[in-house]
Length: 288
Ligand SMILES: Nc1nc2c(ncn2[C@@H]2O[C@H](COP(=O)(O)OP(=O)(O)OP(=O)(O)O)[C@@H](O)[C@H]2O)c(=O)[nH]1
Ligand SMILES: [Mg+2]
Image (tube, rainbow, N blue to C red; front, side, top):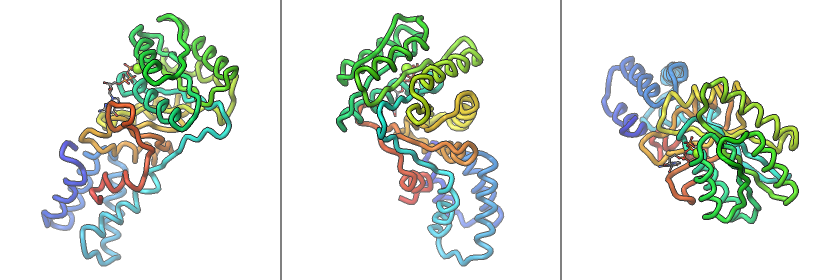
């Protein structure tokens, strides 16, 4: 999808291929766009059916129909601080942008007048704590941390306790994306989740999974793994500023029902947007 999915779609429409070839190529393009094979086939078949039963006068008609088909699977979730404190446990594999996203979200809510605390529960690497600490200093947020190698569960416990006593509104917890084994990672995250739920049950605790928009199909596998392990309440789609347009989000929405909260569009603190499904689909399909 290096050229941009929307542009490729447009060039497909301009090719004036045979009817069946067109839908085959469309299916390939949807797979290439990270929507996954089953969605690609479903959309291509439904669109073919649509063409049989409707008068389609332009490529735009087809694209709008595609947008209508995809929209039930593109879900958004806003993070509101109705009943503070809200805890966001920020999860994701190595290097997807967890720590950067935490800093961006912290700045965003701080600007809205909320009191934000950061929990340095990625104790796996010393540099991870330092990185979050630096963000805390730059953004003027409090941080709760312990020594490298310490128990992430203990850091989370301290963070939540301190947030409750200081009446913080939002707790953002950084976690490790890498462990010695996947089973270890899952066990660790389940433990952390339990600690938060033990202190702040239900609606207070959100598990947010960070997905790198450039990783394609892997993103779906990551979502499936984390969702199975602890249940994911929302996605943060990072690196959306790069060429890829994040078709994985459609697949994750359809097959796992997970909505998107924020989109990362760069490396600076201001480079974060609230997810807008309508805009997302227009960009994906080259309609905007
Ligand atoms: N272009 C771009 N780069 C991003 C975005 N979000 C994060 N990055 C970059 O991605 C790299 C990794 O970001 P981190 O926040 O350290 O990722 P992480 O998931 O915390 O990584 P680990 O702690 O090593 O697992 C950094 O160079 C970030 O600047 C984004 O939305 N756009
Ligand atoms: Mg990190």
